Amino acid sequence: MESDMDLTVHHQGTAHAFSFPSSATLEDLSAAIETTLNIPTTNQKLLIAPKPGMQKAPFPPTRLDTILQLSSPKFKITLLGTPTQAIADLNHQAETNRRREEARAAALASARRNKSKASARPSNTVATLSSTSNSYTFHRLLPLSYLPRPERSLDFLKRLRDDPGIRAAMAKHQFSVPLLTEMNPAEHTSGDHQGVSRTLGLNRNRGEVIELRLRTDAYDGYRDYRTIRKTLCHELAHCVFGDHDRDFWNLTSQIEKEVDAADYNAGGRRLTDQEFYNPGDWEQAQDQEVDECGWTGGEFVLGGLGQGSSSASASGVESRREILARAAEERMKKEARKEKQDDAA
Image: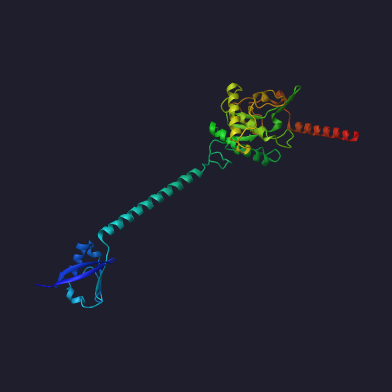
């Protein structure tokens, strides 16, 4: 009978004992390791000290008693290899990580495509001066370039468009106005024996164009901002109702209150409990009227009266030159009166 050969194989800090007959080969040792430790032969590397050193698959059928120095104090067999389950776990983890990275890359690519689509503006759309993506706004602002300092008028229109109260009211009522422009005071001022009438705003075709009287009659300054904003609320109500009936005034009052409540620049509270909008203030004014109700149809020419209005000869509209001359005459009269008062003093 062959005597047994006891061997110890060290793997990942653990000693594993094996017993073989004296005729066992290196191939037998590899097969026993695969069966006991579940490490495939192809994954095994045996470091045998002091000799013969590193052995790799495929292992030859060499007898162990011819190559192992069992009597050497330095004798040691170290196994380098990974069990089948550990390899499967690593492969599974690698596959999971790969899928996760692919999903993340797909999500980032989708987000970039959506962002690109959102920022891209078709060439046939109206260019907007606003940085907001909200569609309920004034999509284009247009000052009158032939009047003095149109850049100031543009700043005024921007302030109205970006007013927090106006923005909130337009979003609530879903008002989307293609064009907000300024009105030429000379072309919307009429006079007769009873006095002078000044139109403050116009809404054309239920919100297609809104015009506002920004400037003073003499073009030497701008009217009060809150008054102009009040006029704008009036014109926004014409996007729903054309006539100055009770429904129109109720909506105007509602818009005014919403604008005032959402205006955080005003401190977020009303100074009084009095109603912010009073239709009588507009209707009973002697020298101004808000508008001629909501205009429908007609030709719109910037700076012109359009077909929807009466002719200059019929309404007594004064030219710009006449208004400027009248304003200059009034200033001269004031200066003359002041000189007389100074001389009398």
